[in-house]
Length: 278
Image 1 (cartoon, rainbow, N blue to C red):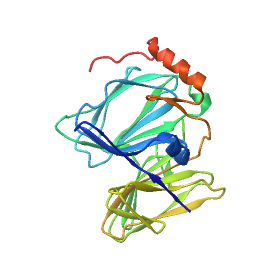
Image 2 (image 1 turned 30 degrees about the horizontal axis):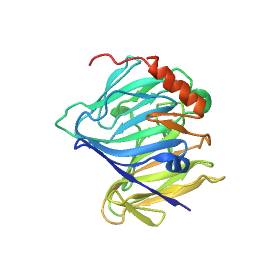
Image 3 (image 1 turned 90 degrees about the vertical axis):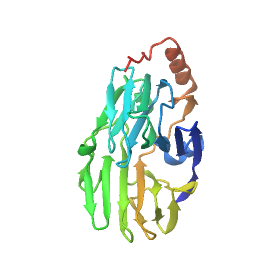
Image 4 (image 1 turned 45 degrees about the vertical axis):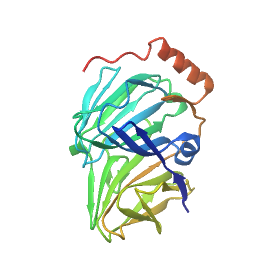
């Protein structure tokens, strides 16, 4: 049995638009994820900003017109290519910035916030990257599944992030069906990307403002995706909920008010570091 989570539209000027899940209610539904945006970005939108207490993950779809230039106060500088993924585990604090590699083109992406277990929130920050050609791909009759995080069947992502989650980028041909197993005790949700996808008998599309969420069960389950009205693309997320409090301030999220106040003070003292020039 699924519930429906409400998506929010978000725009930042003319260069960024998104549909996303945000807020404490959504975070409780999709734990260990804190939020996710299905976004289009065509210019420098967000200035350098701090993160602490969780992981910021960027995944670019294969149809993204350009990549993202990524940099952080750890000294990491990289270009996330179409089909690639970058995971920044902020831990006790990092300053981060991402901008389109070519401002005349549009980045098509997911921006994902994944919570860190309480004991990891004070850890040293680090980054993980996955190149497009290293993403495992499962080809099935009428369906293709990219596995940037977690696993599907015998395919497993080469990344070992601090919070174990699954992210499956699923393309269905017209009339195709895919059955996806979800582990016991895992929350799961499906985000339509293009076309209309039927999820366990309910229709969803990227023009709507809702998506199906599957609360954790004690036993394993399956989720059935079908493309009944032309080809469709969707992303299935799943993970073991952390079931811990979340206290936000701007782009920082910690498990207690005291930890959040300490992170804010640390940032204000300059202890998150600074960005080097591109």
